[in-house]
Image 1 (tube, helix red, strand yellow):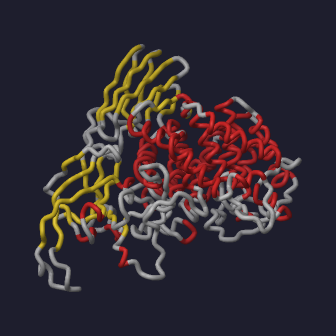
Image 2 (image 1 turned 90 degrees about the vertical axis):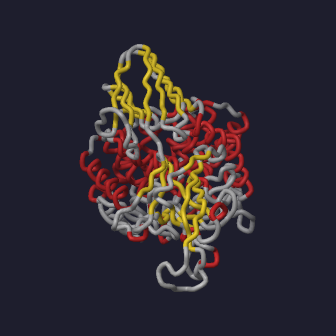
Image 3 (image 1 turned 135 degrees about the horizontal axis):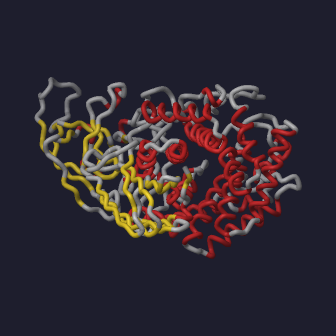
Length: 592
């Protein structure tokens, strides 16, 4: 199975064209400006000295590198001289300050040069990985190879220090990412030593480590081929899983593939929120145990949701099954999308599924923030969102000798080597999708979403197939309607409550629409839903009837002591919560 990249798929309209426009016209400038104000951009001059403001941090390279990578994706379809010049300026500074041995890091160059590659927790290889990914993207878009050659020199130095000499203070990185980058470097250069470096970092993880630290949090508690559950820091775990799947695909490693399959099953069956969010605990930003999915304190980092989508995408190349596209879709419309404000200027690092009344937040308990911020001390999520949305065309199609596989539904044009495939849709507003094809006869395989129970046609492994002639058209419809979802009995926090979904979109109640104490509201199961178009949300708002207790004065009373009053209830897409005012929010609601 071969991945079709964003370079061949142009998003032309609908939900994701609007999102990409928001990113390139607003978010890219907002993120850059905040990075400039906080010293991240200036730090690439490598001229900071003790006593100066804006002391560099050891993960700043990665924040800016992801922004640079985003620019590469954007200007391929939408040339922008301002953005391009900003990246070239940063490349100039990297070139000027790169060591003769190939090393580059804005923190260790000026703050602790004597400590480089001495501590696995200091993110050097993580930063190197994001710089490499940016360089690959820049080369693929512009054809200019200066940045790529610089990062090849850096990768060669990493090989020398970690593999040839073994002089580094650790064997494998504390935060996985270099592995994904080296795979991309291998793909673009064809140099086998880069994929062998990935194998080295995978094969040595979990044993023969020079320093273990918190081995579970950094996925060093077992050899990777024995890691069947998702453990530790959620983003790191997903980046490790991506690297494992990458090597399994390219090197035919069946044991790695099996471990990936087991880990993926563990995530989606025991450790994933209905929104596609993962990593339930703020302690270590981590997975905990099966079915530990609290709503109020849910950590569910935006980057972790993105990581899950990237993992699922790679699994799709190993095993054609609709479940991978289902998980990607869940992330796309919920668990990652809530991470950006509707105006594109502010972001969530964490994405809880419930916000309680402000006065009920207990002292000493850590709660997620309830207002998006423009920048964070660790600002990994904003540029991860910009690069993810700008390259979202990566998730639409794959191809093999049997035909073309469509995994996500976005209005777009896919230009193949000898064919053109146009997709027309307003998904997820409706479930209607039209394909117009011009080219040689082939077969089109279309994912039937797991939430869809009204599709007319034969389904195999989650896909329906259609024979395409030279010039052909295929119309597909996935009936979309609001549905109440319930959780497993093992998920005690959600027992007796329901989440409302419409197609792939999870909905929630907010205080600004429904009044205080939204947790006391119950939907009438028999009432049905009215759909109201809301252009700011891109998908309908849902209106329905329900009830709530009329009097809450006493702390405890006999059942039915106070009458219930009927109320009008409004539900909005989960991804849009906290855009109007701060206040209560609830995904899992009572139903009567």
